[in-house]
Length: 110
DNA sequence: GTAATGACCTTGG
DNA sequence: ACCAAGGCCATTA
Image (cartoon, rainbow, N blue to C red; front, side):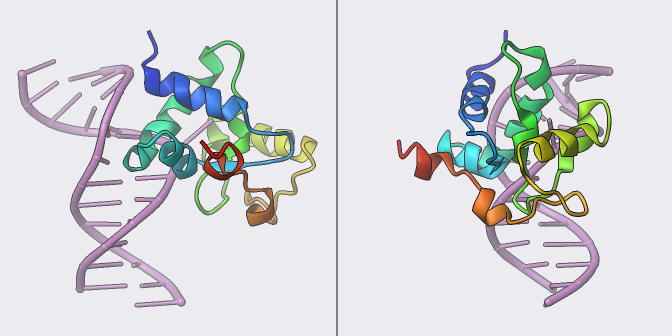
C-alpha cells in the first residue's frame, strides 16, 4: 500500500554502498522531487516496515547529522550501525561526511 | 474534507 | 555570520 515514492526511496537507500552515507535531499533530487525532501524522511519512517529492511542509518540530513537516530528505537542504534560501517560519528555527526557522502545522481548517474 | 505533523531544504532578515 | 520563517508533498488524526 506504500506509494511509489516510498518504494523509490527504499530502492535508492538499499543501493547505498557499505561505509557510505547520503542525504534526504540527494535521494529526493535523484527521484526528481527535491522539493519533497521531507517525504524521504517520512518514507524512512516505514523503512523498518518494508522487506527487506532499509538501512536508514546510512541516510542523514544535509548537515551530516543523525537527525533520525531517535527513530531507531534507541538513540544510539544508528550511531552503532554507522560505526560498524567504519563510519566515525562525532557529536551525532558524520566525520568526513563529504568523503563518505554517496550521491545517487553521481554514482548511479542516471 | 479540513487541519496538523514530519528522520528536510532554501531563502529572507 | 547567525536566527527565523516558509515551502513542499504525503500520511495521519
